[in-house]
Image (cartoon, rainbow, N blue to C red; front, side, top):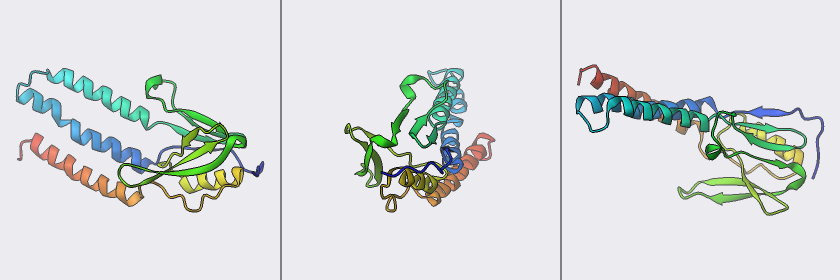
Length: 181
């Protein structure tokens, strides 16, 4: 295990492409629902549906508001204080406890990676941060572990494609809502 005191502390946040796309997709899917509920006289009042969707958007925004902090002592995933405990997936680990990096398959066929500790605990590496390669270099410098084969779960082009389809969905929503459809 090597320790590199020359490294500056590093704080990373989720990629704006990813968070923006996910939030936009949620809004494109849900914003028309209160209008449709009103027009179809659904049993759920439109204002109640709008409130529930607003709370849902806050929860989604909150879960995307974490930050990754790396320093010479260790790594931590931290959420803002306003996020309720049941939504937080915070953790922290000291570099001296990290013994390896373990890949695990996802149900969709992808790979995620975990930092494994001396106690057998496994901490999921954040895969959607801006500066992912910078984070891997930091981990390698602090632990000496090989991070060369680790790749992000989803490539930026995938989120770019989702953003394009989200824009198309939102434009169709707007077209229908404004009465052109």
